[in-house]
Structures are given as structure tokens and as C-alpha cells.
Image (cartoon, rainbow, N blue to C red; front, side):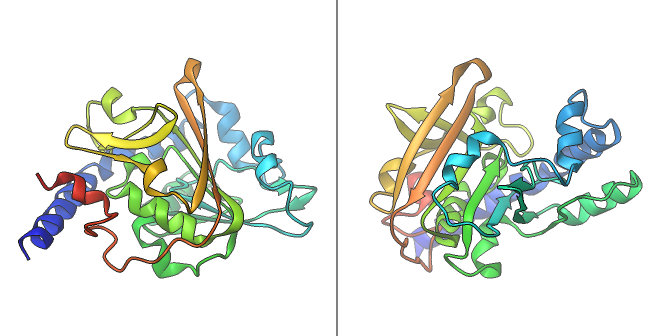
Length: 259
């Protein structure tokens, strides 16, 4: 009972910190929209272009699939998904979710802009409450999961929603929370250590590569000049459902915080 209470308090602590940082995230995207990209005009225009092809580095994750319209989930998509909308001359069926979707709707209305793919409300931690397992051809997140209150839980959910022999793709800056000095939503670091994907902060550390064996095959590419992690997870078999995914004594992320 005491351990479960500790896990609950830990979750509440991280969620409180996350909640306190939301205003900074909303302000960032407000400024980004109203300045048309804060100096990154090409990125801004690409996100608004319904005919923009899917980024070429993502093609190999889909090339093995039969022709037809593919279903893609973007987790923590912001107001405008970064994904290109066209693949093999066909539109992708992109579902974009973010816990701040209602605020983004308002920001886009103020700017008189219409998103090619409207972001809808969902916390990453609640993905399995909204979507059925094994229903997406690709699940994607860019620069978002390290801003969440339970990133490992989200990653497991992303894997469950992905079809077997399909991919989860994570693209994040390495050790972003360290760089941001743990301000705002920056509470977790994503990093590669000795070839493994790890999530850490000053009080906890988890080797995700080891935790997820044998359910996924993880390939990591680190682009040092831009401090960028490209983490590809091929789903090999279904990941068991854990009713107590936060506080599970065997696999839960928060067990690293007990002592």
C-alpha cells in the first residue's frame, strides 16, 4: 500500500510540474503561428501545405507495405503536424493528437488559418482510451514525448497501437531537459548510451531498449551536428497490456523513483 501511494504521489508531482509548464508551451505556439514560424518560414509553410510529400527519411518505414491509403498517428503534434501529407501520390490518413488541441484551435482561428490536418485533443498517456490496438501503419512523435508527464507509458501505448511489423518513429533532441534546465515542460531527457535508448532525469533512469525486448527492434541514429535522435522501433509482437502501467513493480517507469 505504501509503495502504491508513493507511485501515485510521484505521478501527481510530475503531472503538476507538467501542468505548471503548459502556459509556456501555449505562448510558444501562439508566437510561432503569429510570426509564421519564428524565423523558420519554410517549416511553417510546409506544415500548412496539404500537398507536401511525406519526408523522404520516413519512406523506408512504409515502403514494405502494400499500396493503399495508410493510417498514421502523430502524438503531440502541436497545432500543425510536421508530417508531409502525401505518400505514393496518395493522401495519408493522418490522425494528429495533442493535449493542447483546444488552445491550438483558438490560435489558428485568431490567425485565420486552417490546418490541413486538424489536431484533436488527447493526452499521450490516454492514447489507449481513445484508439484500438494494432490499428496504425505508423505512429510518430517529434519533439514532444520528452515534454510529457509519463513518456515511457506513452511509448508503450504507441507500440500497442501500431500493427505488427510496422514502425514507431521518435524524433527528439538529445538531453533537451538538461539544456532547458528542467524549466516548463522539460522534465525528461531522451538519450543514447552504449547504443541503447534511455530516458532519464536527475532522480530516475530507464533503459527503454532493454525494457522493451523482445517486443520491438530498436534502431537509433544520432545526428551529432544538430543533437537529434531518430529512434525507429519495429514492432515484432504485441506488447502485453499492464493495468497498472505506471506503478508496475516489474516494468513500470516510476519504480526507478522508489528509493
